[in-house]
Image (cartoon, rainbow, N blue to C red):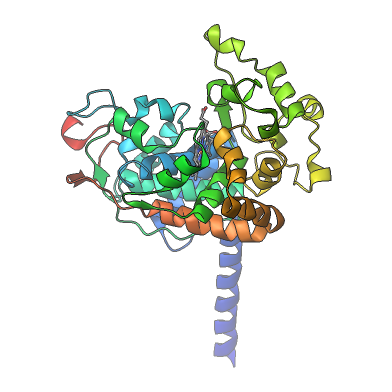
Length: 344
Ligand code: HEM
């Protein structure tokens, strides 16, 4: 009896310990994942915007020759300094400092930079969604040794794409993503920021017909970031999500998140993107064009109305994205994520 009580106490203490760990949102079975999670959490606490950058980094690494850490390289023997970071389509790409900090913490754990990107992106998605978006990551990716700006510009979609271009981009070569997955992943634009140059084409009737963007939203964007700024060499940034705009902006844009059924908390990774898109209050043409295809438009409505379904499908699509196989020939586990080993 005394023995049983002892066991019961141990079990109780163990459960209490695990509950404590779980409340803190930590992993308990894997030291590397634990270290990554801690760094990502710290980074987001210091700078909330960095979480979105880490989610985007997964897309921009894995879309170009698979998940191989090539997006992190500052220079390579074949491309010099003209690496993916220099691609026009990588405008605003960020999060490199966080990846460096994580690499430093796991330097004795034999973890590739490619693995760090997908782990960090996964943790950022989990934190920004309040724990609603979670998915497992298997490690073992290796780092590539080449990185080309031109290749990144060929591979990555741009914000002025029409629907057919997006569909083709998502289903070409080693990337086999369905229309549903295109719609699911586009929901990542519920977080983060964009430069004026990425949506300036949406600000005039001449470039974008009135029915493609809500007139009040367009007026608010023109008031805060007039396209003329580009001619003066300025390229300011605005939140991707009108939910994350100031109250004054939202008033001008006639955007009332609560009335629309959107959680007004700023910075959350959730299905608000679908509410906004269906009201034409989204930044990019590539967001709006999802309304022009029957299947994609149906999915927009589904994800607007079923937030839990979007969380689940987004997690699955991110896991698939994070598993895109590296396409190169030569690999290593880089010591420094910014340069290949024989340049270290
Ligand atoms: C469907 C095609 C897509 C296009 C055309 C596109 C385009 C863009 C553009 C132009 C920006 C703003 C860049 C800037 O001006 O600074 C952006 C930001 C962003 N994109 Fe996408 N994107 C696409 C898909 C995705 C996917 C699949 C993800 C992630 C799974 C994603 C995640 C993000 C995030 C999180 C940001 C904000 C980044 C930050 O604040 O640092 N995008 N995207």
